[in-house]
Amino acid sequence: MLKKMSVFFLSFWLIGGIAHAEEKFSLSGEVSFQHDADIYICLFTMEDIQYLPKNELLPPKCKAISMNTDLKEAGKVSFRFDSIPKGTYCIYTSQDVIKNGKVNYENYQINEPFGTYKEQGPECGNQLDWNMIKFDLEKDITGIKITM
Image (cartoon, rainbow, N blue to C red; front, side, top):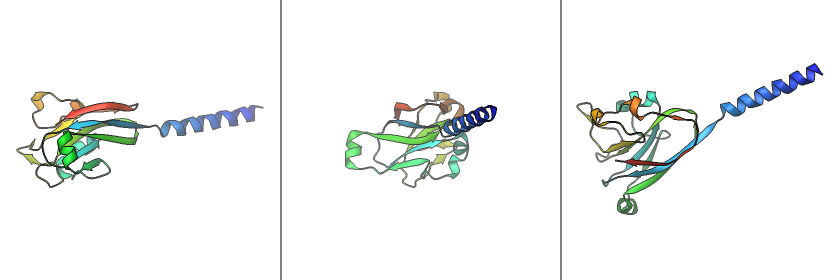
């Protein structure tokens, strides 16, 4: 009897641990914009933000949305990220008016339209402050609104 109970509890513990380890969530919302240029919507970790000046805005961390007449008229675009593991992230959006697929800086300031899910204060200027824009993903988040 003790052996059967031990096997049962061990199985329950293993299955519970696997289910918890596979916890995934989704994020969705829309980005408003003003310029006629491609849009990048990125889900970044702290490490991604630290190396942002050296990275191109590429999948899988970024979704590239090509500008077209319908999007330009609407002035906004919807987005969705699925199967994202629990963790700490930021959503960074950029409009590539320079048309090179990168985040462009001038004097340590981002010089293209951008936005984030969590607003940062005006004291940050056109620099990203991880501590202000990060959020913990522990459940699905919908209805996100970002303005560039």
